[in-house]
Image (tube, rainbow, N blue to C red; front, side, top):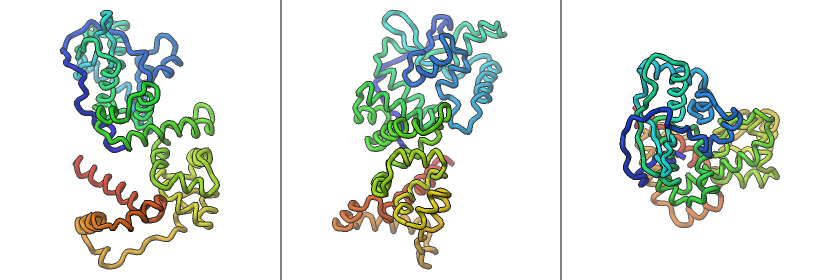
Length: 345
């Protein structure tokens, strides 16, 4: 979901920057995304446990403990935080930290440990009486594309909670996040299917959220149809994910071809998709195409797409898992990755 984190104006109202007493700020233990994780730590989670529950470390390749220590040491070295936390001043007078719980927890911890420095107050962006949807919007802005974005699984989990549990329509989520309905829907479906099919097949404590991108790939055209047509189901798919038969995860887009190819299928079952892919026919590229520049190829592809006849389009729609659609999907992924690298440079 390339754009599902690009949050735009969300009508959260105006806010005032204040310096608040740390002792008056309540940590957001009711955050639906982390509530069950915090419950595992007991009634008084430590700052590091809050940090881990919030998924602040990023992807699974990060060393969570080291990253937490960097945050802690950075605050100590700077004598405070640079980015204000975000607080909801509720109608009953309570101050709930919406964004910045780890930083508030650290301040509270520094006070208890009597660390040198002024940890009794903290800069905050304070909103007055925000409604639940406004709080959700703040979280989306902060974590779907903000300075500390959630990992894809956590993004999907929160979107699923908003859409399924809180009945927020896809159109409204799109407005909040700047994403497209289809992309958001795919993320929500991928999360639901991962929970339903993948979680039961892995041993307790082995649930790997980095496998989530495999379930996003599963939403690509023709993948599920090919699995069902080959007399398999999504439990089988989840087992392939767990057993790393589908590694790297971008080999999932080759599944329709692998499952239709007798020899490739046999190798896939024993050795996985990477080995099976070696048996698939590679498209030949003639001399003229191989010598064309990337700009010429892009222009040619665009022209061809714009000039597709109705009959050609209908033929492609009848075979969403066919080789042409799969090639188009791979081209889209490659081009998106290239454009992202160019724009970030």
